[in-house]
Length: 437
DNA sequence: TCTGGGGTCCTAGGACCC
DNA sequence: TCTGGGGTCCTAGGACCC
Image 1 (cartoon, rainbow, N blue to C red):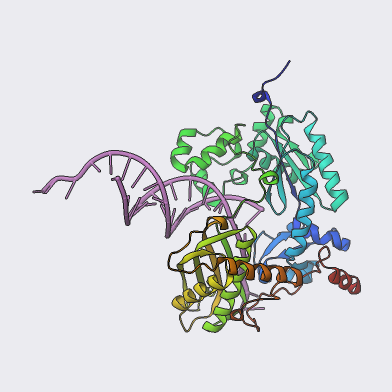
Image 2 (cartoon, rainbow, N blue to C red):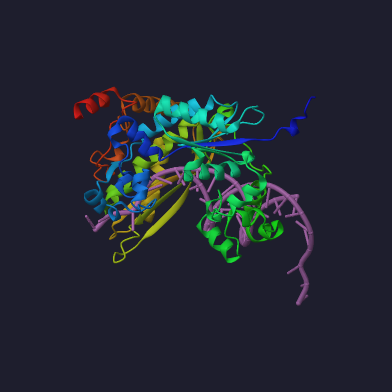
């Protein structure tokens, strides 16, 4: 008998790599297996990825590295600066492979994606095992697979797949009796649910909603009234009613970003307007490059600066300024001029600045550029120059060509004391890796 | 001594328009 | 002293995610 489309049970899978950054490092250095390994954020500041062995040492996610440094001596903790060139390339390979397992894929972050398994008539759990085996064999990356009727349930299933060894890395709610489902949900803290963060968790606990099961059966009208539609959707999704659709990254291509931020902490604090201007100029160039990559222009630019908020005894100052552009643009030179005018306005003498950044807003496609009667049209010329600049920087490395304002010394640049070579993207560094051995 | 860098969505409130 | 009703757009801020 022919079944109506709606009779198909929607099925989502969430696949993510375990300890992705650490796993990437391990692919190229197998001696790291079974050892406590962490990868650090920019400036070697925080711990952003931990191997299981590192987690077992009690190292928390996101803690400042200096709090764990003593474990290098005492427990042989191994650490790396982050190498986003390597992780980005490994991610692209993983997503290409995973995309081949389903007609539709949503790439959700650098290390996870949703697959649409709706209507695929096979045992979802064993299909999940196949996906894991292939990713391990072809890329060397360990993964976990969660399956459910909604994205929220797939996320939660992924949590179980990861935490409970008896499931062998794959968990499917649909292979679960309803009673068993509630029993499992009663064992999971409400804070593990996708969309429930620290704040919401606290407020929910105050209402005696402490487990996933509690939230699943919570009074919808009350949730709506207290927390709005976002959490109301989450409750529906926990009950198997799909409210969040798969956003088809494969077909529609990369979505245009609505805001672009380029901001970094400085390797060491800086005090002068000259240095600050150089940093801001360089961040603006980076942001403008991202803007051109998605073929957009922006109408507003925000510049912000701040001192080190963790230094209690130090004088604090933080400020930002939003600047409109006369004509929307993606020209590094024009954006840079505006950004520098902003930094001059908010700069104050006598502070140790630790961080600065640039945010681009009012982003729309370059084809929609609104002319200005009083400004001669220089767009054609500008886009040619920018094209050449992007091309050279892509071919010969970042900052081959940059504005004089960005400075040549750049002693404010980030620290990255232990970055591994770019094994997969640079022949020269592959040779270097061999020489190191 | 040392504390990341991106993004998203939703809501409330004000400005402005008819 | 009286002072509409609705709509749109923008911004700031709060929450979340990785």
